[in-house]
Image 1: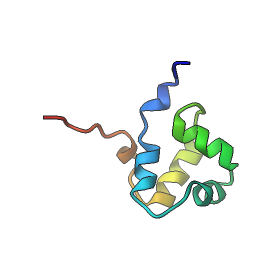
Image 2: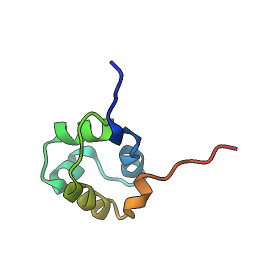
Image 3: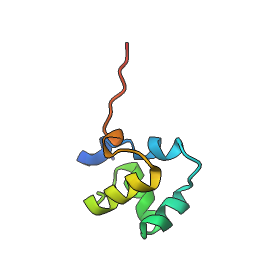
Image 4: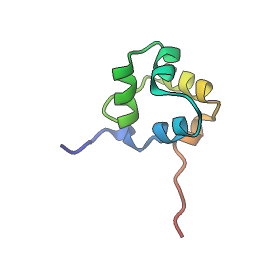
Length: 73
């Protein structure tokens, strides 16, 4: 099944993996279920703006970090 979520391009999982935080820790800090957080990382569930802002604060990154594209030479 192809994922057609427009938010799929977000680099949420990549940003989390740069830290020592687990998916469980992030879910608890965000006040959502682990299942919902994993779906957000997979791009199969939309993230509300307020939760997106909270996530960037938890991870200690600017919101724009989730959108940056890698340059391949």
